Length: 81
Image (cartoon, rainbow, N blue to C red):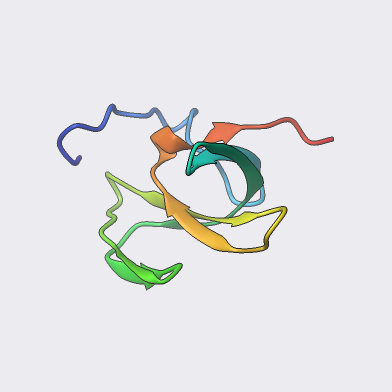
């Protein structure tokens, strides 16, 4: 696990297809989880340093359609409408 990050239980981690929200430049953004990233890779225009123990998640904004990558701590589950 990376230093400075709080552990997140498997139950709290988002799943593919789930609606989530996150902060982007001080604004709440909503979207869906596209995939769980568990190895070092290129995603959403940047290098993602993830692992099985410290995964990150690729999400897509409902409003803009743009992709981003976030840690599970940065994502908050939303109820489907």
